[in-house]
Amino acid sequence: MSTVLKIWKKILPFAKNKFILTILIFIVWLLFFDRNNLIDRVKELNHLRQLEKDKKYYIERIDKDSKRLEQLKTNNKNLEKFAREQYLMKKDNEDIFVIVEED
Image 1 (cartoon, rainbow, N blue to C red):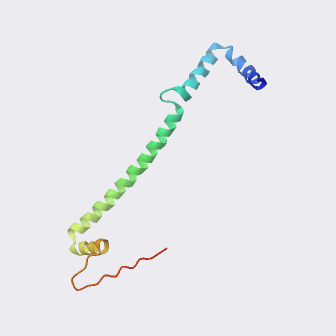
Image 2 (cartoon, one colour):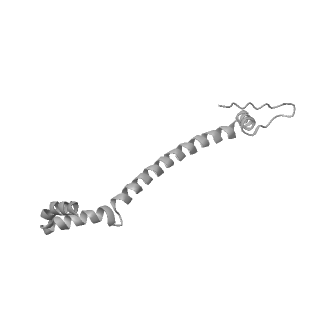
Image 3 (spheres, rainbow, N blue to C red):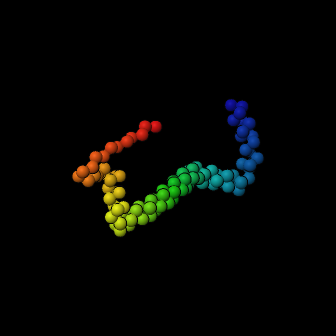
């Protein structure tokens, strides 16, 4: 109980002034209890930053895939190479050997 009294004695000089007390209550209310409190605000800002990073990644990925798609549409050799590498397609008189490297 003595620690509570010590803390109260430190706060008491500020509590005598009603303006300071009102400002302190207002600040505590904004930091913890308000709908837009500080804790939720920081979480939302972090979430927004992550979404912006994701957006940047997906835009870069779309550009890369669009260029790759354009190459596949315009050149038959690139299309054949893509089909052979990705889908293991082959000609009638060929054999395919897949080499898997283990790390």
